[in-house]
Length: 171
Image (cartoon, rainbow, N blue to C red; front, side, top):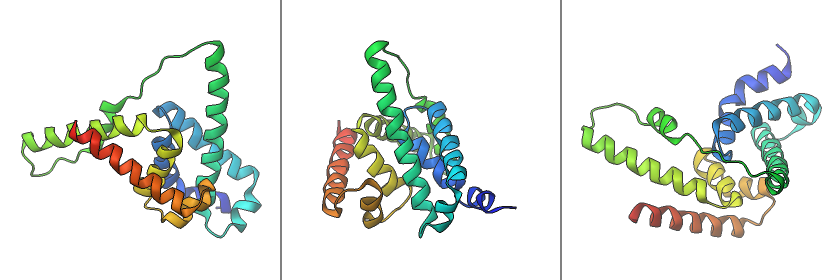
């Protein structure tokens, strides 16, 4: 097994989750995931030399997603498209069936739907930070390095994200 296969085995789940969190739909997330590892294969020496391989791969995915968004924005000016994120299927997978009552599960499902809707409505820069912090449990210092922002800016955006999500749950 060569080095890039080992990296894929170790980090594929993490990178796939990240791609799903920052993409508009599952198909785009899968394309982004695939493109990330194709790019990693192209620059294998840089990936292997990186101090933190996971952060490096997330940086690749982030860069590719930004490029995709720019391309989509150019295309939208010419021909607008309509797509929606299939939230119900993902939410049903996210809810675990345990000893909770049906009522508790329905309330939890509704909260997850609201949180996901609010996350999808966040500006892209906020969505990426939320995905890295909450989805990947990444420290603020690493997030700041990946998104190339000061740590204070990342902290203030996390504070705003929490406020938006809290307000969305209260409504």
